[in-house]
Image (tube, rainbow, N blue to C red; front, side, top):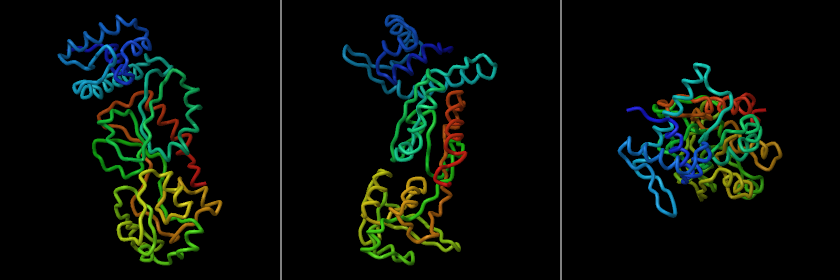
Length: 303
């Protein structure tokens, strides 16, 4: 069964905007043409992709299941045309990108104008959250993940190293004392993410230790990285932070590294990831190259 890629583009855009007429206008189609083209696509698939009422449009269960495949077909067409030298130099369409909110606020948001100036006809749809998500079910083209790349259904390119260290505010340490050995952490207030999972630490000579909020004297649970840093700055306790999130505070003295030499033992890397099954479309490749050139080539927190 052959599928009309223009109709697929219309469906993808309508699913993102939840507005068929507006999606069609963005593709140069009149409202009547958009409705007819979408109806023909649904007829050929034998499924209703979008529920329509007089007031709103919503994605059906079948439409949600089909959406990632529609995006994949479009990406394959774009990649094929690029390989043949027949793709327009101007990038168009929507690129759906997911990233941790804390990192995006500090390093991605400030450079977006530069990227959009180069590619004014490309729409960036950003999903920013420090909570883990399913890349494939979310139908994202690309994501930044600050965790080990263990999912075999994903591929990735390294953006930068992601060292994790223990920090506290001077005021907190003056009040509660500075831990001298890892076991001293149990007598402190520890700030952790919602899962409160213990984190293995490695010392300067290879010794092992554990950052375990559940065994601490007190704990503060925060599911947002920037809020964790702010709470640490305010003297709420000791937290395990990415170097990229605290390096400026360490330089200014507003934060002090606790147990110097001890770092999270995981091989932490900031990965730009995408589903292994996906063809790497030109818009995704260009955005990846941009992020690596602007951030990964010379990470500000390693200078």
